[in-house]
Image 1 (cartoon, rainbow, N blue to C red):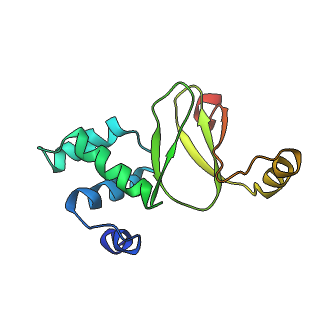
Image 2: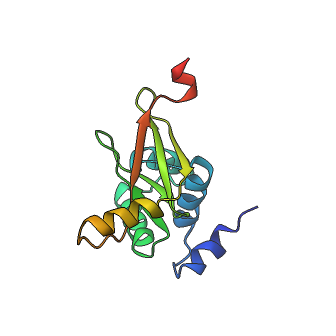
Length: 134
């Protein structure tokens, strides 16, 4: 079982019941937008506000504990920070999956072809998941 409190402390984040619940939901669901996270947390914390969730998400992003995944034409989703990876997004059902990719060759080529200093990547590959492809 994951110790969410220890995980938060390891990123120098204050441990609160709301933060533990946010981390638990993201760990269990992978990627979630604010609205879905809010709906899940309302059952545990009936008085929680969207502002509280935004405040906690922003604090966790600032500590590089969570990352925001921006997908065209949809609400941003959030995930726990992991090793460098791409996102496979189903254009039919909206399902999001992680795919571990070695992006070093892409970064090397981009650095060689431009003077742009790249400090992060967000690779989105869109198509049909196995279920929708049938």
